[in-house]
Length: 225
Image (cartoon, rainbow, N blue to C red):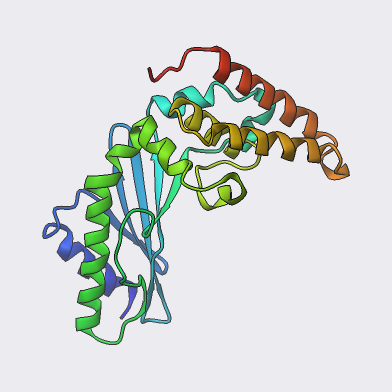
């Protein structure tokens, strides 16, 4: 199997599964992308060693009011840590299925099974999950599904500390009980940064940005009420 075979097989199934994705190929990847009014989706299916197919996550880019309201709370000094609002969703976050999406494909039958399972999962997320992630309460439930100590398991885009700023805003606006836990956790991290020489310049900026964010979240109206 080569990348052209994989691309052709997926393209043939596009209409069968009623997918609105654009399908492209590049190097050893076939990608599926979809643009909606309030979010973009990007999926990359990788072919290795002419037979091994691997896929693990979706890249979900918010373009709605959640993104706009978070962005305006970030101080100019920290915008370089913002990047985009890419949420990384794994196939297992919401989809309960024992099928592994890392498979060594040896024949046409195994390829057909793989692509069928892959597209069923994609279709489930497209219809049941992606639209809901534009709702602040659903998004807060997703972000708050892990304790602060495991917060790296949920990827919302950006780098430290802004990636946690995003989570704090989502948790607060979504009225999630883990907000205080995340607030205290990040406050502790920033205080520890002051003790680390390599963060000597950044730590004051982190604290300034954190205090601005918390003041706004706790003193200004919730934009989603």
